[in-house]
Image (cartoon, rainbow, N blue to C red; front, side, top):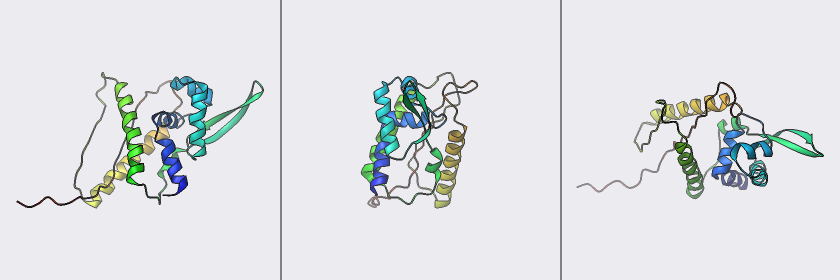
Length: 180
């Protein structure tokens, strides 16, 4: 795995940074805006934004002069995540990201509305045809693209806050069980 790919994976494999990426999908925000929305200190928000920017996960959308300084507004260019990738991720690196994703899923599930019937949870470890796997992968890509593309700034009128998490991957088959 390249140093850039490793830096990127390690940068996003942190629950706060996953929240920041989600927040900056639908809005261009400054460090102060991120700090207010996520209840962080300004210094903490700035640190996490810098890590994500250095890893290539954020871009500076604009800069404006405020009180003798320059405030940068960041955005998450989520569209790049849907380009075909030619990188290999080690099991250790995948586990780091999976732990951060799992921690974020637990946090989000605690915030789930219990009066809504539209929640979906699914978990499986299955044997399927390559064609069925491709169909499922395309459906998840469509759902993710739809939601990312529809993201709006926090608390925008007419919006609801939702969580979307998905993990779909091929597994090693492992040894066959001994025949009786």
